[in-house]
Length: 124
Image 1 (cartoon, rainbow, N blue to C red):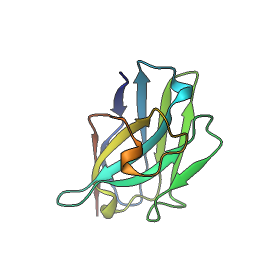
Image 2 (cartoon, rainbow, N blue to C red):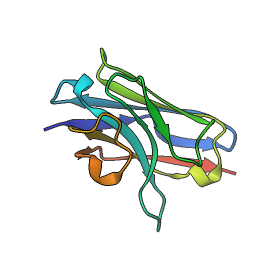
Image 3 (tube, rainbow, N blue to C red):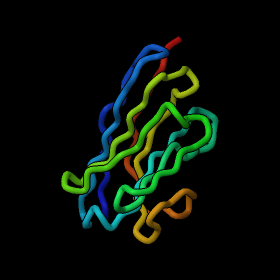
Image 4 (cartoon, helix red, strand yellow):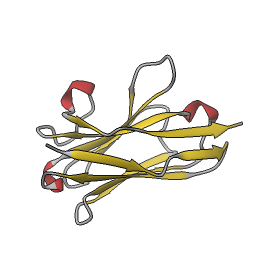
C-alpha cells in the first residue's frame, strides 16, 4: 500500500503562486512514477503534470505548460507542484497520484494510488 498526503492548497488571487507538496509512504519512493491531477466541479479529472522515477523526465498538460513545474525529492519522499501565474480556471481539487509500474505515467489508468486531494481556489 502507498499512502499519499497533499499539502499546500488554499485561496490565492489571480496572478499569484502556490506550491503543493505530496508526501508518500509505504513503498520506496524512487520506484514510483508520480503525477498531479485536478478536477473542477462538473468536469473530468485531468492530468496536470507527471514526473519519472528519477525526476529526469516530466510531462505537462497543455493548459499549464510554462506556468507550473513538477519536481521531486526522493530523499524526502515528496513530490512538488509549483504553480505560478495562477488563473481562475486553475480552481480545482488537486490530487497527487502514484504508479507502481509506469515510470512516467500520463494516463489515468496508469496510476495505482491517489491522495485525498487539496482544494486550490484562484480568485479574479
